Image (cartoon, rainbow, N blue to C red; front, side):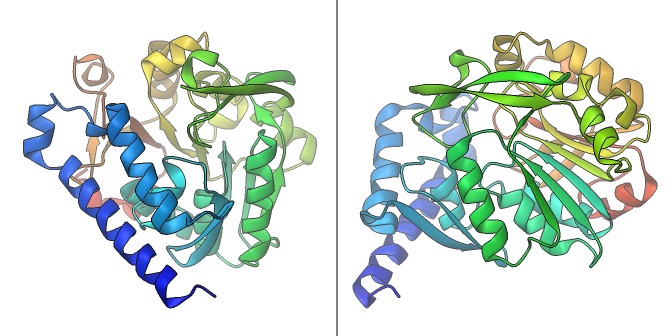
Amino acid sequence: MPTPMKRLRQTLAIGMMRAARAANRSRLIRTLLGGRSVRRFPLVNRLYHTVFRLGVAAGDRDVEARYRGVVLTGPAWDATIMPSISAGYYEEFEVNVFERLASVSRSIVDVGANIGAYACTGAARLPRDGRLIAFEPVPENIAYLRRNVEGNQLAGRVTVEQMAIGAGPGELTVYLSGEQSGKHSAASANVGTPAGAVTVPMTSIDAYLEGSGLGPPDVIKIDVEGYEGFVLQGAAQTLTSAPTLLFELHPELQANCGGDAGELLDLVFAHYRWILLVDELNNVLRPCTRADLDTPGMIGLYRSNLVAIGRQEHLDAVRPWHDL
Protein backbone atom coordinates (compact mmCIF):
# COMPACT_ATOMS: atom_id res chain seq x y z
CA MET A 1 0.00 0.00 0.00
CA PRO A 2 1.42 3.43 -0.91
CA THR A 3 2.55 5.67 1.93
CA PRO A 4 0.78 9.02 2.46
CA MET A 5 3.82 10.79 0.99
CA LYS A 6 3.80 8.60 -2.11
CA ARG A 7 0.07 9.16 -2.58
CA LEU A 8 0.64 12.91 -2.32
CA ARG A 9 3.43 12.78 -4.93
CA GLN A 10 1.19 10.76 -7.23
CA THR A 11 -1.72 13.17 -6.81
CA LEU A 12 0.45 16.20 -7.56
CA ALA A 13 2.10 14.54 -10.56
CA ILE A 14 -1.21 13.43 -12.05
CA GLY A 15 -2.60 16.94 -11.55
CA MET A 16 0.36 18.39 -13.45
CA MET A 17 -0.01 15.83 -16.25
CA ARG A 18 -3.72 16.56 -16.61
CA ALA A 19 -3.07 20.30 -16.69
CA ALA A 20 -0.41 19.81 -19.38
CA ARG A 21 -2.81 17.71 -21.42
CA ALA A 22 -5.55 20.33 -21.15
CA ALA A 23 -3.14 23.04 -22.27
CA ASN A 24 -1.94 20.92 -25.18
CA ARG A 25 -5.52 20.42 -26.38
CA SER A 26 -6.47 24.10 -26.04
CA ARG A 27 -7.42 26.03 -29.16
CA LEU A 28 -4.70 28.65 -28.53
CA ILE A 29 -1.86 26.12 -28.30
CA ARG A 30 -3.12 24.19 -31.31
CA THR A 31 -3.33 27.39 -33.34
CA LEU A 32 0.19 28.45 -32.34
CA LEU A 33 1.61 25.03 -33.24
CA GLY A 34 -0.34 24.61 -36.45
CA GLY A 35 -2.45 21.78 -35.07
CA ARG A 36 0.53 19.79 -33.82
CA SER A 37 1.20 18.56 -30.31
CA VAL A 38 3.49 20.41 -27.96
CA ARG A 39 4.96 17.02 -27.13
CA ARG A 40 6.71 16.97 -30.50
CA PHE A 41 9.41 18.97 -28.69
CA PRO A 42 11.90 16.56 -27.04
CA LEU A 43 12.31 18.74 -23.95
CA VAL A 44 8.56 18.75 -23.31
CA ASN A 45 8.47 14.97 -23.64
CA ARG A 46 11.33 14.59 -21.18
CA LEU A 47 9.68 16.89 -18.66
CA TYR A 48 6.34 15.07 -18.97
CA HIS A 49 7.93 11.67 -18.41
CA THR A 50 10.11 12.99 -15.58
CA VAL A 51 6.99 14.16 -13.73
CA PHE A 52 5.46 10.72 -14.28
CA ARG A 53 8.59 8.79 -13.33
CA LEU A 54 9.33 10.74 -10.15
CA GLY A 55 5.77 11.43 -9.06
CA VAL A 56 3.81 8.35 -10.13
CA ALA A 57 6.30 5.56 -10.77
CA ALA A 58 8.62 6.76 -7.97
CA GLY A 59 11.46 4.45 -8.96
CA ASP A 60 9.30 1.34 -9.43
CA ARG A 61 9.82 -0.98 -12.39
CA ASP A 62 6.07 -1.52 -12.82
CA VAL A 63 3.22 0.95 -12.47
CA GLU A 64 -0.26 -0.10 -11.35
CA ALA A 65 -3.22 2.14 -12.08
CA ARG A 66 -6.99 2.00 -11.81
CA TYR A 67 -8.49 2.73 -15.18
CA ARG A 68 -12.18 2.67 -16.10
CA GLY A 69 -13.09 -0.02 -13.61
CA VAL A 70 -10.09 -2.29 -14.14
CA VAL A 71 -6.57 -2.34 -12.69
CA LEU A 72 -3.74 -2.20 -15.23
CA THR A 73 -0.04 -2.79 -14.68
CA GLY A 74 2.56 -1.68 -17.20
CA PRO A 75 6.21 -0.67 -17.56
CA ALA A 76 7.40 2.50 -15.85
CA TRP A 77 9.76 3.24 -18.75
CA ASP A 78 6.83 3.81 -21.12
CA ALA A 79 6.66 7.52 -21.92
CA THR A 80 3.08 7.71 -23.21
CA ILE A 81 0.69 4.85 -22.50
CA MET A 82 1.34 4.33 -18.79
CA PRO A 83 1.35 8.05 -17.93
CA SER A 84 -2.00 8.55 -19.64
CA ILE A 85 -3.48 5.39 -18.11
CA SER A 86 -2.30 6.52 -14.67
CA ALA A 87 -3.90 9.94 -15.19
CA GLY A 88 -7.13 8.35 -16.48
CA TYR A 89 -7.21 9.86 -19.97
CA TYR A 90 -5.64 7.19 -22.16
CA GLU A 91 -7.47 7.36 -25.54
CA GLU A 92 -10.49 8.44 -23.55
CA PHE A 93 -12.96 8.97 -26.37
CA GLU A 94 -11.84 5.94 -28.38
CA VAL A 95 -12.24 3.69 -25.34
CA ASN A 96 -15.72 5.17 -24.75
CA VAL A 97 -16.69 4.06 -28.25
CA PHE A 98 -15.07 0.65 -27.84
CA GLU A 99 -16.82 -0.02 -24.54
CA ARG A 100 -20.19 0.93 -26.00
CA LEU A 101 -19.66 -1.44 -28.94
CA ALA A 102 -18.52 -4.22 -26.61
CA SER A 103 -21.70 -3.90 -24.56
CA VAL A 104 -23.83 -4.89 -27.59
CA SER A 105 -21.45 -7.53 -28.99
CA ARG A 106 -20.66 -11.17 -28.24
CA SER A 107 -17.18 -11.53 -29.75
CA ILE A 108 -14.23 -9.18 -30.28
CA VAL A 109 -10.80 -9.52 -31.89
CA ASP A 110 -8.16 -7.14 -30.53
CA VAL A 111 -5.13 -6.98 -32.83
CA GLY A 112 -2.18 -5.27 -31.15
CA ALA A 113 -3.53 -5.61 -27.62
CA ASN A 114 -0.42 -4.14 -25.93
CA ILE A 115 -0.84 -4.46 -22.13
CA GLY A 116 -4.61 -4.85 -22.38
CA ALA A 117 -6.26 -1.46 -21.88
CA TYR A 118 -8.83 -2.16 -24.60
CA ALA A 119 -8.93 -5.91 -24.01
CA CYS A 120 -9.70 -5.57 -20.31
CA THR A 121 -12.16 -2.68 -20.50
CA GLY A 122 -13.92 -4.25 -23.48
CA ALA A 123 -14.10 -7.74 -21.98
CA ALA A 124 -15.47 -6.32 -18.74
CA ARG A 125 -18.43 -4.92 -20.69
CA LEU A 126 -19.19 -7.91 -22.89
CA PRO A 127 -22.27 -9.95 -22.07
CA ARG A 128 -21.63 -12.82 -19.66
CA ASP A 129 -21.02 -15.33 -22.47
CA GLY A 130 -18.98 -12.90 -24.60
CA ARG A 131 -15.43 -13.65 -25.77
CA LEU A 132 -12.44 -11.50 -26.70
CA ILE A 133 -9.31 -12.74 -28.49
CA ALA A 134 -6.27 -10.53 -27.82
CA PHE A 135 -3.28 -10.80 -30.18
CA GLU A 136 0.05 -9.32 -29.07
CA PRO A 137 3.49 -10.30 -30.43
CA VAL A 138 5.94 -8.47 -28.14
CA PRO A 139 7.17 -10.57 -25.16
CA GLU A 140 7.22 -7.76 -22.59
CA ASN A 141 3.75 -6.57 -23.58
CA ILE A 142 2.32 -10.10 -23.55
CA ALA A 143 3.55 -10.63 -19.99
CA TYR A 144 1.71 -7.52 -18.81
CA LEU A 145 -1.34 -8.44 -20.90
CA ARG A 146 -1.63 -11.86 -19.28
CA ARG A 147 -1.08 -10.33 -15.85
CA ASN A 148 -3.83 -7.75 -16.41
CA VAL A 149 -6.32 -10.25 -17.81
CA GLU A 150 -5.79 -12.60 -14.88
CA GLY A 151 -5.64 -9.82 -12.29
CA ASN A 152 -9.04 -8.52 -13.37
CA GLN A 153 -10.59 -12.03 -13.33
CA LEU A 154 -11.17 -11.91 -17.08
CA ALA A 155 -9.40 -15.12 -18.10
CA GLY A 156 -12.78 -16.75 -18.68
CA ARG A 157 -13.62 -14.15 -21.32
CA VAL A 158 -10.24 -13.34 -22.88
CA THR A 159 -8.01 -15.61 -24.96
CA VAL A 160 -4.46 -14.25 -25.21
CA GLU A 161 -2.46 -15.20 -28.31
CA GLN A 162 1.26 -14.38 -28.55
CA MET A 163 1.57 -13.77 -32.27
CA ALA A 164 1.39 -11.11 -34.95
CA ILE A 165 -1.51 -10.76 -37.37
CA GLY A 166 -0.92 -10.05 -41.05
CA ALA A 167 -1.90 -11.04 -44.57
CA GLY A 168 -1.12 -14.71 -43.99
CA PRO A 169 0.69 -17.26 -41.81
CA GLY A 170 4.46 -16.95 -41.45
CA GLU A 171 6.83 -14.86 -39.36
CA LEU A 172 7.21 -11.13 -38.78
CA THR A 173 10.12 -9.10 -37.49
CA VAL A 174 8.88 -6.52 -35.00
CA TYR A 175 11.19 -3.58 -34.27
CA LEU A 176 11.06 -2.47 -30.66
CA SER A 177 10.76 1.10 -29.45
CA GLY A 178 12.68 2.45 -26.50
CA GLU A 179 10.12 5.26 -26.09
CA GLN A 180 6.78 3.56 -25.52
CA SER A 181 5.34 0.07 -25.43
CA GLY A 182 2.76 0.94 -28.09
CA LYS A 183 5.28 2.12 -30.68
CA HIS A 184 6.77 -1.25 -31.64
CA SER A 185 6.31 -1.74 -35.39
CA ALA A 186 7.02 -3.88 -38.43
CA ALA A 187 9.03 -0.88 -39.74
CA SER A 188 12.14 0.32 -37.95
CA ALA A 189 11.40 3.87 -39.14
CA ASN A 190 8.24 3.94 -36.99
CA VAL A 191 9.72 3.20 -33.57
CA GLY A 192 11.57 6.41 -32.72
CA THR A 193 14.39 5.35 -30.42
CA PRO A 194 15.27 1.76 -31.42
CA ALA A 195 15.54 -0.98 -28.80
CA GLY A 196 16.24 -4.12 -30.82
CA ALA A 197 13.91 -6.45 -32.67
CA VAL A 198 12.13 -9.78 -32.26
CA THR A 199 10.93 -12.25 -34.87
CA VAL A 200 7.55 -13.71 -33.99
CA PRO A 201 5.05 -16.16 -35.47
CA MET A 202 2.30 -14.61 -37.55
CA THR A 203 -1.10 -15.71 -38.78
CA SER A 204 -4.07 -13.99 -40.40
CA ILE A 205 -7.52 -13.36 -38.97
CA ASP A 206 -9.08 -15.64 -41.58
CA ALA A 207 -6.61 -18.47 -40.92
CA TYR A 208 -6.93 -18.19 -37.14
CA LEU A 209 -10.72 -18.19 -37.14
CA GLU A 210 -10.90 -21.07 -39.60
CA GLY A 211 -8.38 -23.13 -37.62
CA SER A 212 -10.13 -22.52 -34.32
CA GLY A 213 -13.61 -23.17 -35.66
CA LEU A 214 -14.80 -19.78 -34.45
CA GLY A 215 -17.31 -17.69 -36.33
CA PRO A 216 -16.65 -14.11 -37.44
CA PRO A 217 -16.33 -11.56 -34.62
CA ASP A 218 -18.67 -8.63 -34.06
CA VAL A 219 -15.82 -6.12 -33.59
CA ILE A 220 -12.20 -5.99 -34.74
CA LYS A 221 -9.90 -3.39 -33.18
CA ILE A 222 -6.51 -2.90 -34.89
CA ASP A 223 -3.56 -0.92 -33.51
CA VAL A 224 -0.36 -2.15 -35.17
CA GLU A 225 1.69 0.96 -35.98
CA GLY A 226 1.37 0.97 -39.75
CA TYR A 227 0.62 -2.71 -40.42
CA GLU A 228 -3.17 -2.24 -40.54
CA GLY A 229 -3.51 -2.82 -44.28
CA PHE A 230 -1.88 -6.24 -44.07
CA VAL A 231 -4.13 -7.22 -41.17
CA LEU A 232 -7.22 -6.43 -43.25
CA GLN A 233 -5.82 -8.17 -46.33
CA GLY A 234 -5.71 -11.32 -44.22
CA ALA A 235 -9.33 -10.85 -43.15
CA ALA A 236 -10.98 -10.92 -46.59
CA GLN A 237 -13.41 -13.71 -45.68
CA THR A 238 -14.13 -12.28 -42.24
CA LEU A 239 -14.96 -8.86 -43.68
CA THR A 240 -17.84 -10.32 -45.69
CA SER A 241 -19.83 -10.44 -42.44
CA ALA A 242 -19.06 -6.73 -41.82
CA PRO A 243 -17.72 -6.79 -38.25
CA THR A 244 -17.28 -3.25 -36.95
CA LEU A 245 -13.69 -2.05 -37.36
CA LEU A 246 -11.73 0.36 -35.20
CA PHE A 247 -8.34 1.10 -36.72
CA GLU A 248 -5.67 3.75 -37.09
CA LEU A 249 -4.97 5.64 -40.31
CA HIS A 250 -1.38 6.91 -40.42
CA PRO A 251 -0.31 7.15 -44.08
CA GLU A 252 3.36 7.70 -43.20
CA LEU A 253 3.53 4.74 -40.82
CA GLN A 254 1.69 2.55 -43.31
CA ALA A 255 4.05 3.55 -46.12
CA ASN A 256 7.04 2.73 -43.91
CA CYS A 257 5.60 -0.77 -43.45
CA GLY A 258 5.31 -1.21 -47.22
CA GLY A 259 1.58 -0.58 -47.31
CA ASP A 260 -0.60 2.08 -48.88
CA ALA A 261 -3.19 4.04 -46.90
CA GLY A 262 -5.25 4.63 -50.04
CA GLU A 263 -5.53 0.90 -50.74
CA LEU A 264 -6.46 0.32 -47.11
CA LEU A 265 -9.29 2.84 -47.40
CA ASP A 266 -10.46 1.38 -50.70
CA LEU A 267 -10.74 -2.02 -49.04
CA VAL A 268 -12.72 -0.64 -46.11
CA PHE A 269 -15.08 1.46 -48.23
CA ALA A 270 -15.76 -1.56 -50.44
CA HIS A 271 -17.20 -3.44 -47.46
CA TYR A 272 -18.82 -0.82 -45.24
CA ARG A 273 -21.75 1.53 -45.47
CA TRP A 274 -20.89 3.81 -42.54
CA ILE A 275 -17.36 5.16 -42.08
CA LEU A 276 -16.81 7.58 -39.20
CA LEU A 277 -13.71 9.61 -38.41
CA VAL A 278 -12.90 9.82 -34.71
CA ASP A 279 -12.61 13.49 -33.74
CA GLU A 280 -10.90 13.11 -30.40
CA LEU A 281 -10.80 16.81 -29.54
CA ASN A 282 -14.52 17.33 -29.95
CA ASN A 283 -15.65 13.85 -28.86
CA VAL A 284 -17.65 13.16 -31.99
CA LEU A 285 -17.71 10.60 -34.78
CA ARG A 286 -17.77 12.42 -38.11
CA PRO A 287 -19.32 10.58 -41.07
CA CYS A 288 -16.94 10.79 -44.02
CA THR A 289 -16.68 9.77 -47.64
CA ARG A 290 -13.69 8.29 -49.40
CA ALA A 291 -12.98 11.69 -50.97
CA ASP A 292 -13.16 13.41 -47.58
CA LEU A 293 -10.23 11.35 -46.32
CA ASP A 294 -8.07 12.48 -49.25
CA THR A 295 -8.62 16.13 -48.31
CA PRO A 296 -5.40 17.75 -47.02
CA GLY A 297 -5.54 18.21 -43.26
CA MET A 298 -8.46 15.83 -42.73
CA ILE A 299 -6.23 13.18 -41.14
CA GLY A 300 -3.86 14.34 -38.42
CA LEU A 301 -3.33 14.75 -34.71
CA TYR A 302 -6.53 13.91 -32.79
CA ARG A 303 -8.10 12.65 -36.06
CA SER A 304 -6.23 9.47 -36.95
CA ASN A 305 -8.73 6.73 -36.08
CA LEU A 306 -11.67 5.41 -38.05
CA VAL A 307 -14.73 3.37 -37.14
CA ALA A 308 -16.24 1.32 -39.97
CA ILE A 309 -19.74 0.04 -39.20
CA GLY A 310 -21.83 -2.40 -41.17
CA ARG A 311 -24.50 -3.27 -38.62
CA GLN A 312 -27.42 -1.18 -37.48
CA GLU A 313 -27.13 -2.21 -33.83
CA HIS A 314 -23.59 -0.89 -33.70
CA LEU A 315 -24.54 2.34 -35.42
CA ASP A 316 -27.29 2.75 -32.82
CA ALA A 317 -24.88 1.96 -29.96
CA VAL A 318 -22.63 4.90 -30.81
CA ARG A 319 -25.45 7.27 -31.71
CA PRO A 320 -24.60 9.73 -28.91
CA TRP A 321 -21.56 10.74 -30.94
CA HIS A 322 -22.89 11.01 -34.51
CA ASP A 323 -25.90 12.37 -36.38
CA LEU A 324 -26.54 9.66 -38.98
